[in-house]
Image 1 (cartoon, rainbow, N blue to C red):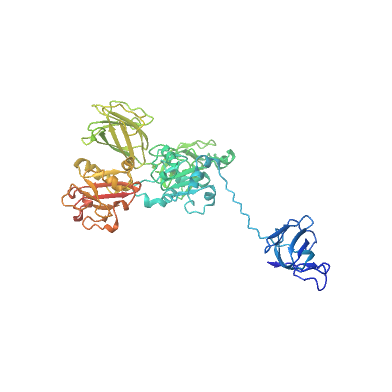
Image 2: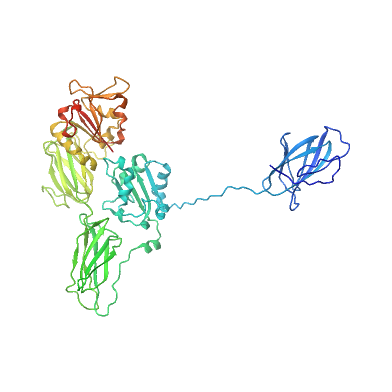
Amino acid sequence: MNPMPTTLRNPVPLRAALVALAGLALPRGAVAQQPVEIAGRLLDAGTGAPIATALVSIPALDISTLTNTDGAFHLVVPAGSHTFEIRHIGYGTRTTEVEAPDGTLSLEFRIEPAAIEVAPLEVSIEWRPSYLEQVGFYERRAHGNPRSRFYDPEDISRGGDPLIVGWRNTSERLLNINRTNTLGCTPQILIDGRRDRVGLMTTLAHHRIGGVEVHGEPHNVPGLEPLIRAGGEDGYCPTVLVWTRQWLTAAELEERRIVLCEPGLAAERAPLVVEGTVTDALTGILLPRATVTAWITEPGGRRRETETTADDDGRFRFCDLDPRTDVSIWARFAGLSGELARVAAEGVPVTADTVPVMRDLMVPLSRHGHVAGRVFDLRRDEPVREAEVRLAAAEAESAPGDRRLPAEAGYLTTSDEHGFFAIPDLVPGDYRLDVSHADGGIAGDTIPVFSGSTVDVRVDLDPAAPPAPDAASPAAGPRIVAERRHPRLTEVGFYERRRESATRGRGHFFTRERIRALAPPRLTDLLTEVDGLREVCPRQTCRLISTRARRCSHASVYLNGVLVMDGRAWDFERGSVDDLAAPHEIAAIEVYLRSVSLPGEFAAPSNRCGAIVIWSG
């Protein structure tokens, strides 16, 4: 505490006590220990102005008062020495010692203003575009899921994050965040809630993007899974949501619009004008903002290049090429290039009038998709042979009678003796799948076919009941369940082993869709669904035993192809199968109950009692 300056008012030698920051005027002839009436004032030391609403107190006596508008205050205290404390927001806290003899005492305190320490005022302003609010961007960000990342307009415009700098191949870099948990699930991209089938994301410039969400576990983000499923994707697969700047004003959109060039005036001859569109070679989808390059060979053999950019409708135009040169053009999109197209200038009139040469370009962006399925009898859970399978584009009607119809009309095939069917080389898109059998039973649904991947389909026919697409329970009546095959499971041979097992009865297989349908709380609860596999708990740690093999203690366990629990030397300290992963983290499981049923990849002396193969994802 800082002492107050001393001011003495009407001093009385021998009867007054000089104290720091105070002046006293003490009456004569006072009797000791009698109450003392104190009348005081509090003034500004520089201006002499009264200080109002200051707190004057004697903490030891627990008494206090406030100064009035004249800076005056009044206290009654016992005679003796007292510590005065004065508090005011503009002057801080000051203390001083005052000797108070009996009688009446007049005090005057003069104090200097004190510097006030004020915490810096921080103002945070966040621009929240209404479009991002409408799609729930900020609500999902506030949820704070640790497996999600968000980039708002400020993040994207700043470009400081390496994931936001440059958008070519950005989808791969964004999804690398979750690579450790995407072993069996293909990452997916939605732009404004729609599937990005042709790689548009890699062509988006900064000014076209307003927000990006990266979700490693979309099903754990409230309200997100329905949004993803509405876009035709899997709510359990890592997902990138890209929100474009649809909130731009008309003037801003016009400023960012790509305007095709117009041919200039030529004195001697008209320029060679080349125009056309850029499309995906397989789907025919127009590719906006594709890069088109012209390779020009001059009469002397010198070569040079010039480039232009297609507009938002996939159209391009070169306006000032020399008709005397040899020109070839090609297009690039999302890191892929199309074939060269030669532009022949022969026949172009050498006049002042410009006659454009039309050349449409294609980029092999999409790849064929495939459908592989199996038909079952719902009541008996047995495969159905010779079931008729018809697949047609969702917007097209198939023509009955043809075995293999044109691609735009559809395809027709039948299931084999084990209920399997396959339709390869399909253009990516939505298809209508209808399955029926002569003995009764029909099922139909729309399934998506993805670029470069296979859709796994299970069809359950119920001869005793008509199709009930609006049934309250998805498990009741005939149904079609479509699941996109995971690339990693394809690479490790999971689907090949499953098909071979179906024909030879070697093993039991669980896909992600099947695991979700059963919704087991533990892996053990899922695995004991297999007839011939049971759980025993001789100690506090439980183990799984095959009842189909003789003199067996327990089955070996593989995780992602690596032996983690040896069938010959079970280590109870390492825990049980349930300690390896939770059911929602599993992409697929293979169960083999005997050593003779093991495929070559898992045949080993330690697997005499069979093996359980777990694929995470």
